[in-house]
Length: 345
Image (cartoon, rainbow, N blue to C red; front, top):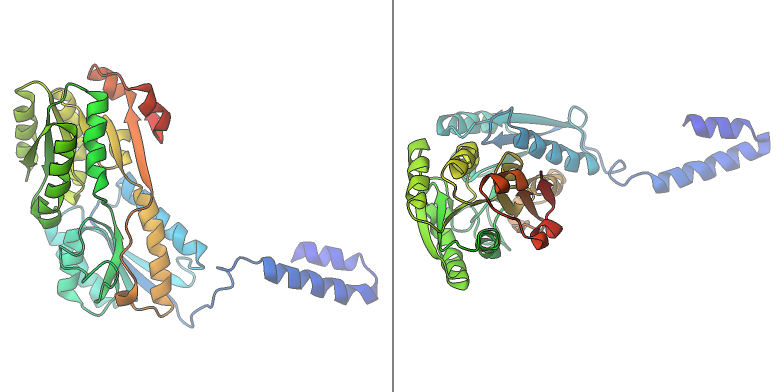
């Protein structure tokens, strides 16, 4: 209020009170709504269980987006909100350990990053609200009764929309028109419905673009390499890395093998193209985490998670790595370059 004080001192005594009250009233109207939101009598707490390593750049970007969304709604870490983070690194044992730890802390809400995390948390609590981020098929996984009416203690934001599958195949054909076979890589243990959730959109995309689709089930590094070796045995092969926590954790190996075997590959997330993948198309993960803050805010203010509908992705990103394209001897069409959100040179 120093600027206000300086202004008041420059006026006559009879004007001071009127001017000050006018300015104060204007300031109250202009003050951000989030800053004037009703503050709780005690610090509220949330838990966040990420299935990435703590030093993963994308994971750090995700939690920064979550905190940014919370701050816009009037919640500040260390102020009126405490946040307990746990980093499972894709390790099932750590997921179980940290899920128990967070539930024992009795937070007001838990943010869950992957399907294995949600499954494990539900084994520990049916009372603490859980807001998931980056889940493909919450109904099929049994997390919610329906998108419109989740019905339990879980709701959140999905990372897949069926039209994405056709877009992945279309991008492959645009970049490498000679492609006739597409291998879809995923781990059935960590992918929605063991991969069955993606079968119908994959079949539709294969039919629309006249390619043969093959399911490449991978459980470890050796099977990932075997999948690329098999694809490379005949000309006209491409690959798609389906979104799941296993493929996300192993994306660097996939990028390396795709270049070694010269198999054009489409990735699900932008950070994969930024790290050397040929091309990516998928949801904006940071946007999902920032949107999750709105549900956390509503739950902290008394909303029931059972009544908060599951939300589908609304923001998608296309990233192209021209350096990788040149290494594979591919020319990116100008039309794709023009619409890309990011072109890595």
